[in-house]
Image 1: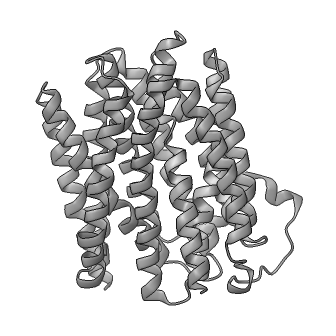
Image 2 (image 1 turned 90 degrees about the horizontal axis):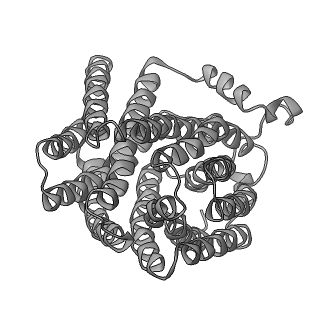
Length: 396
C-alpha cells in the first residue's frame, strides 16, 4: 500500500462526500418552491436507491477487470450529470429521471470506495481500521456537506446544485489522477469480461457462489436496518420543514453537530470495539440503543427532543455502519471481495428504496407513520441480529 496515495484518496473522498450532501438540505425547499407533490421527498430518493441497488453488484464485478480509480472517474462525472438533471427539474417525472440516472453511478462510486480500500490494504488488521476511517470520512464529511448545503440554500436552491455538480465531477477527475492503480493487488479473473456481464442481474446470480447462511443474515440486517435509517432520515428532513417551517440552515446545523459527534465516536468507541471486543456480537447493543432513540421520538412532540434523538441516532449509526461493513469484509476472499462489496452496497440501497419510498407515501396519512416504520424496522433487524449472534457463538 502506498501511504501517500491512500492519504490522497481520503482527502479527495472528503471533498466528494461533502459535495454529495450539498443538495439534501435544499431538496424539501425545491419540492415546495416548485409545487411538486410532497411524496417526492421520499420517492425521489427511492428512485435513486433503486438504480443504485440494481447496478452496485455490476460495478463490484467490474472492479475485478478495470482499475478502481477509472470507475471513480466514470461515476463521479455520471453522478454530477444526474444531479444536474435533478437540480433543474420542474416536474415529478424529471425529478425521478434525474435521481435514477444519478443512482446508477452513486452505486459504483460507493462500491469503488470500499473496494479501493480493501484492495490496497494487504494487511488484514489494518484493513478494518482503514475501512472504518473511509466510512468515517464519508459520514463526517457528508454531515459537513449538509451544513454547507444549508448555507448555500440560503442563497438559492440552484446555487447549491451548481456547487455540487462542479465538485462531484472535479473529484471524479482527481480520483483518477491522484489514486493508485489497484490492479496489481487484485485477483485476476479466470475469464474475460463479456457483454453478458453488463446485465446487472448477472452479478446478483454470481453472488450464489460465495453466499453462506451467516452472510445472508448479515445482508438482511444491513438491508432492514437501512429501511429504518432512511425512513427516519427522509421523514425528519421534510418534517421539520413541513411541521415547523424550519429552513435548510437548521437541517444543515443539525448535520454539522452529527459530523462532530460521529468523528468522536469512530475515533473512540468504534476502534475500541474492533480492538477489544468481538464485533460479531457487540454490534447488537449499538442497534438497540438506536432503537431506544427512535422509540422516544414516537412519544414526544417536542422539537428539541426530536432533534436530540436525531443527533444521537445518527451518531451511533456512524459506528454501526463501518462495523457491519467490516463484518462482511472479514468473510470475503481476494477472489470475491470486489463482488461482495458491490452486493453490500446493493443491500444498503435495497433498504433505502423501501425506507424512502414508504416514508414518502405514508407521510400524508400521518406524519408519524415513517417514524413508526423506522422503529419497527430496527426491531426486526435486531431480532435477525440476535439470530446471527447466536449462530456465531454456536459455531465459534
